[in-house]
Amino acid sequence: MKRLVIALSVAVLIFGITFTANATSVDFLIGDDNSISTPSALTIDADFTQLPGKSFTLSEGGSETFVYAVINSITVADNEDSYDIIAYLDFDLPPVGPVGNEGSIDVTIKGHGSMNGSNTAIFDISFDPVSVEFGNDGWFTVALSDAALDDGYCMGGMCYYSGSANIEATVTLDAVPVPEPSTLLLLGSGLFGIAAFRMRRNS
Image (cartoon, rainbow, N blue to C red; front, side):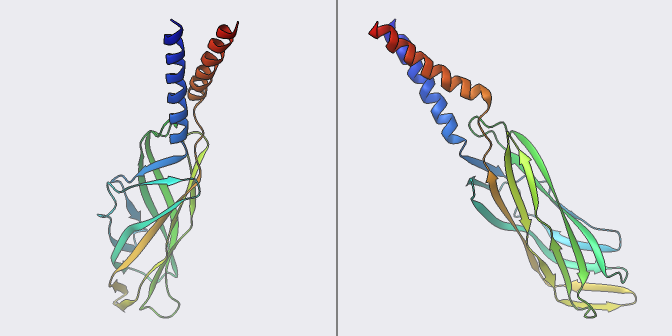
């Protein structure tokens, strides 16, 4: 009976330690709901085929950079100086150890597009970084790079920009989610079981 008690206690302890160790890193998986939204006067032809199914693992403070979209062409129907652009990035976060980060997280990243001053041959795009909370006190930051199409011309009130420009995404894991209380309780019960057995044995 004593051997069974200590065997179970050790098993629980190892189980808890392993799960807690797994919480020091987070698995990221890119879903298939990725897009760029623009006002009606602005049309961006973008390719997101490299994203769905992409996965990577980050430890706290680690970063991963990948191609978010390939811009093929831009069409502008008026002569406004700037345009609001919104990029959407879909994360399917699997459960990692004791971290409750299961499910999908939709990241919204606001950006701006503009014709480069009086030079209508260039269209610039820039985005603001965004921080995302997930799991139990977990945080990661998504930053999209700037991009520009510099082969453009205007005719009949329309401007056309062609060529190819990559928008890269950089994901940085700022804070690793802490273990759920149930996992900490599991780890504590294992330690308590071993301590109780040793005390009974010594007495």
